[in-house]
Image (cartoon, rainbow, N blue to C red; front, top):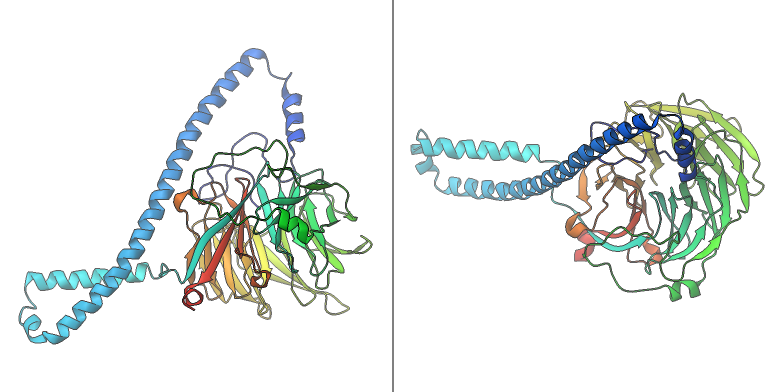
Length: 486
């Protein structure tokens, strides 16, 4: 998964120098490094070093600003090209009709310069249409409805409750996990039991339990009971307006009005990893949990006792993600070794299949309801696989930026979060459906780390949630144009 960095370019994830900010680092640890270096350098060298860093910072700020401006221009030109291509197709159809009715006149003038211009224009339109074939009219409508503000550091992950309570949960580098009311937008519960960055969060399939993983080398299972009274107290029908907002710092609280309830002690602490636990998920039924870590292993635990049941070994580098099948005892793990693995626990003798196809770190992998697997990578591609055929993907989506933790909706729409602050929607065939709008500054200002789809049965106004390293989570209303007409 990506590290914290500003101005990452599409060519790769290069971060600023010095001590890298990763999920396993906390502010206290970084301060320790600074204190440790304090007495090493002579004063005159330290002054010189600070001057150089200041110059580098200024140059970097200029480059970053230029990069943002160029990105906005690219977005604007892309949208303009889409509109012009649609208009061009309409004009082409009109000219063909006119040509059919005046065939003789055009044929008589076929050798003239005006005829050549018409042919050249038509040819250009055809070529342009082919070039922008992937930029079809958005077949779904997207509208930002709610924002959830309060975390003091980047938000790594977001999850939506699977039961009847309309809440979401977030995992942040500020060492907390929070539970929010979807419609009210307020933080209802804050979990502070971890001593490191909280890297992932998952709701139990049927109980009021949440599973979190952390840079403190553990995963926690904790109680998250939200009553209807809490939702009513914090409910609000005010939608987010398009006004500019400044960076907010709530002084350590996850909510600026009264503050949420705080929970510090887990029900179960899942131990056994020797490095950062980057992701965790419940197996079907919620009796077992799977974790993925930077020690190159995935662990299977008994969720009731916290006992380690099995250790999955095979990846050559750090793991980046894990996900379980919604109904079958299948688990996929992704790694920096450019592969992801499918672990089958349905039989007494466990089996494993290795999926190869990416050229860089596989950052995300998840199941669909049709027994397909969708993988995302730093190589700027998303691939759709059949679990029964691991030789080649069914579809490949080429993108312009590395991919973070993606999600697939119940209607098989893939939401893809990017390092370049965009979120794009595709179907399983690889056709682009939409891009979340970035108008009126209603958008992420840093990389989008994770996305999660909500269940329409919750009755909430938002059904897609995006979490970014700008410390904000957005709730979106995403519906197909056909649904809107109905």
